[in-house]
Length: 416
Image (cartoon, rainbow, N blue to C red; front, top):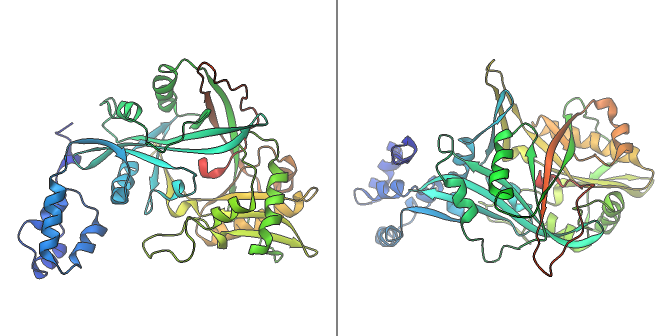
């Protein structure tokens, strides 16, 4: 693939080149950074450093590293590479082409995962393929098990059948990556190429059978479903125990549901940090995003709003007509309500739809597959139902037997 245009050395903007000269940088130093495909933010950071000799020494040290084909864990410096890879990786779904853009923070979704990993194939500084993985504790068939999610498989357009996808499969796993009893993944129902890749990548390589079922989520037009409710307010620390009780009551018994604890929910809302975050760490989902509905002095429903569209956007294009549409969504997380209060849950969803519209997003996504009472309470909003293949594989070896199987899957939208 050496002839591909993507491997051409990026041009240095004239304005940045002038500032490098004004800062006393020797000729060619800024070009060496561009040749190593340093992200723009790092180039800008170094332009603000006073010690030019230190910059040159560091650049020389980096140039000693192997600059060939790498399969490795993604780093902070890969943010622009990963965003560019996803922008140049198209899925074919029936008559439509779909590009799922990730950025400005391409790692936002994985920040919400436990034990998340992003593996990337880098060829001469260009990200040409990637995959994502996370592992967590969960319950399946009433058993406590470790489960692993797989997703985010991408190979850059024009580079399929070049072996990059196989490199992701055969490269060693991260040393601290959990090895689960059950692995699972979602595939869009019309993504024939992805289904074929799964067949090649997983089923042809492993003796264990793949169990196949479907999972569904509801999409609500944010403007049409918007109904602000004065009973809704932001969560307070004193509400957390009640929210945990509501979430566990709502999803009890579903496969892939991890029973909440106060510590788990608080940790999720802390967004990975106690106290303030550095300016370059953008928030993903936290305390301001979880809301409760209080009725008669009692919290009877809770749900959080993850602004998925801030960092993930779906660009659809019809191959025949050329029609284009952009889908930006907000996803409901940590949903729970009191027994007999589907009406309160529906009211809270209407309020979150209004907040979704205020964010400028097109769609509110909610996992209501096993909550028919709530579905009925918001049927007036006329949602569309999206179904995906949910495929699972159980690890097996002598002395290690798992009898549980996923049959009624809980859908946490951070894994969707």
